[in-house]
Length: 132
Image (tube, rainbow, N blue to C red):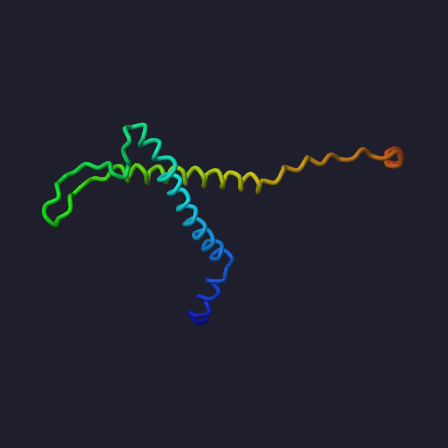
């Protein structure tokens, strides 16, 4: 089988297409979460801690000199990214949990043997008498 044929079979498998759709939706969802964190959650938190923007929080290791930029540890941006991650992780956990609950089929009730009919009871008695 040629490599081109193998690649075509691989590319059109349902799992690959599902994965591609998941990645695209995940990227769009990531943008929504980033906007939620940056535009809705962090401004009130910044206001509560003195009106600062978390993106600007940094430890300066070396001041800017001439055209050389300052060397900084930008822990504010890191905190925002951690918050982004936590929100995405919680949302994905909730979605996976919901999907797993939908996939679980209700356990079937144990099948009870039906009560024998009057005819079956009579035939059983006749059989037992004939054995004697």
